[in-house]
Length: 320
Ligand code: NDP
Image (tube, rainbow, N blue to C red):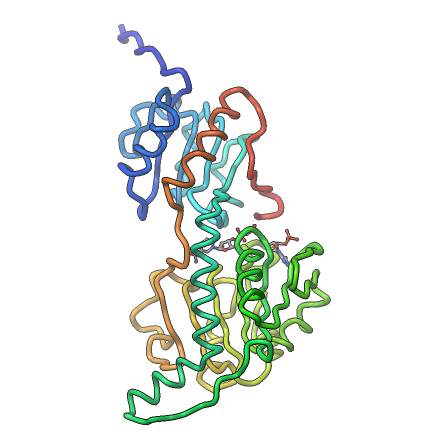
């Protein structure tokens, strides 16, 4: 005879999965908000049918298959491409993303750093320094520098606003029309080539979806003015990486700051590592911050436990 099950805690059980985030820190932050929630690491799940909520970053394929009583899937980040389009997602279970002002602030800080780096010709001075050269180049004033931001969502809109406050001539591009003070906003595929052709610095902040995968192919990248700078903080697969590398080698793209790549970690043999007009960072432009994100996760768990609609839901068919 099987022993009786212990009584379930009031809110149910949340399973956590991430190879990058600290389970203990997240558990403490969530428990402070929801003492009645049972929180387990994915490696400690005894019966998947006992799991009601999942907080996860890039769980392996098949992860959700045995979870028959799920009420909510919370993506431990903003980009949801690792969750949408999977075959193991249970029907009708809402997926939410983090929508954390501190995450947006951290991203805006990275983008501002990268744009200023190109706008102030820092890659040129770094190269000159390595050759022991005092290579004066007169600074350009920010309003002369056209910065285009592709993607005006929670992160893109904040970054565009930050750049506009620095005095850059900022344009933005989104799927549906947006209105951001001081930013020249464009929408839809027909306007993309115009936006690209007017970008001294291009900042890529789009989600990876069936529509945006490979969007910046060679033909689109060639629309950039000769010598333009490219910043990608979104997803590597938005850009044809081979074409981008060749255009960086030829100088059509003058310099790049790249946080994301087609394959991560970027293989040691990748030619991008050897280009001195490229700055590579290992996918960390912004991260989820437990102390600030825990409250909204808790709110959504409470809503889901009552059968209410959670906030910050992803639309799987749209891909973001
Ligand atoms: P959102 O989902 O809030 O916004 C997405 C934006 O892209 C919206 O403006 C949307 O248009 C636009 N968009 C989507 N599809 C298209 C399309 N086909 N054509 C034109 N525009 C399109 O995303 P976030 O701002 O929160 O995040 C952007 C991305 O940043 C994430 O998806 C993730 O991949 C990446 N990221 C990277 C991190 C890092 O550390 N490197 C950290 C966090 C996120 P509309 O406004 O009309 O909906």
